[in-house]
Amino acid sequence: MTFASIRFLRAVVLSILLFFIWILPGFSQKQVAITMDDIEQRNAYLPEDFKATMLDSIVVLNTPVMIFISEGRLFADDSIKRFRNIERWISNPLVSVGSHTYSHLYYSDTTFSFYAQDIERGLAVSMPIAQKYNKTIRSFRFPFNCLGKDSLQHHQMRNYFEAKGITIAPFSVESEDWAYSAVYEYYLSKGDTVNASVTGRRYVNQTLAMFHYLEKVCQLFYNRNVKQIYLCHDNLINEHYLPQIIRELRNEGYETISFDEALKDPVYQSSDQYYKKWGISWIYRYNYQQLKELFKEEPNDLIYTEYEALMNEKNKQ
Ligand SMILES: [Zn+2]
Image: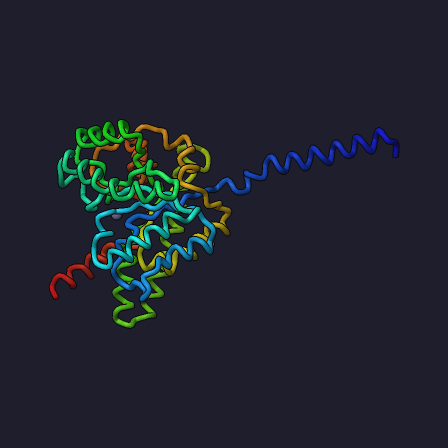
């Protein structure tokens, strides 16, 4: 073999390698940012030492997480411990911080000015803590993802946040984790570990089914994988089952990314045309007229029916 042909061969091998490196991101094109609402809102099943064990799981999984704090809750019982915990969350390098109103208000049930005051009251608490750890709050998630009862309320709040330089936090996938958690905690309180673990497994399956469904909707509409944003809450079922969900998503080729990274997907720059009060995925909000039929066909595990029955039962007691 001549020197020239060896060089040629080397060049070919190098081009093949470069080609594979170039296409490698293609293997992990599926990306998701984990976002968690209602941090430190939990009452049930808090450990003795009151430590945020959910955070320990996040650290083990080494996944970035965006947390949305409803600041008023920090002043509830065991306030000192709640504040200590929130500092544990915020000081962790994997954690980004957002706000979620001081009083966890339903926007459509109140007025713009009352709601805005509540946000300011919350930011006055969370912003200094964020700044203490060289972080800032640039994102706000509406409780119940209710952005207003009509276009006036929607626009008032959009203008308000635009003036403050704060982004309204979107999500693409959610799976009613709060309803699963209520049913799960009910079974645990009765000592029924069998039904509790059935509920846990149902939650994992439903979450994966929702990911698969939204992936298909995005493929159909955008012809590509969209950076997904998963919305869940700080609750017991996530403490026990979120690690499993993340592991299963990773097995399916998902990479966990930061919320800011997910927001770089151009889809999240689309204009929101949805002026109702319901908390639906932003993928539908951007294209509601075209996608509303697909929204109605989302996988449904009927957990809400069980949740409602449980709540009715509790109210009777
Ligand atoms: Zn919430």
